Image 1: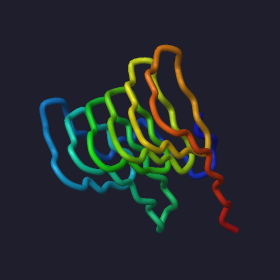
Image 2: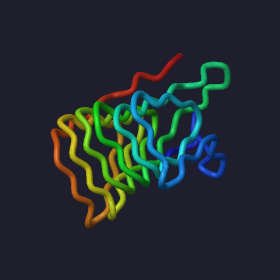
Image 3: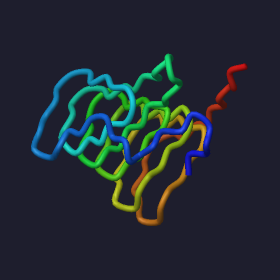
Length: 129
C-alpha cells in the first residue's frame, strides 16, 4: 500500500493513545502513532531526518480542530478539521467520517461507506535526489 521506499512498518507503532484519553493542543509525533483517544487541536507528524522514516498517523478516535498532517494518514474514526494533509498516502476506511475544509493528498484510497466532506486537492511530492 505504501510502496517500499521510505515506508513505515505499521507493525512498529512508536506511540499509542488509547480510547478514553483526551489531548488538547498540538500533538507532534515522529514514526507511527495509533490514536484512539480524543484530540482537540492539531496532530502533526515529522520526518525523522537521520533515518528517513516517514510519519504515519492512524486515527481510530476523534480529532477536532485545526489540522492533521503526516506523510501517511489512515483515518478509521471521526475527523473534523480545517486541513487534512497526507504528503504521500491518505487512506480513508469505510467506518471513517471526515469533514475538512481542505484535504491534501498525493495518493488517495477510500473504502465504500466512508463519509467524506471537503475540498480534495492532489499534491505532488518532489523526490529528493
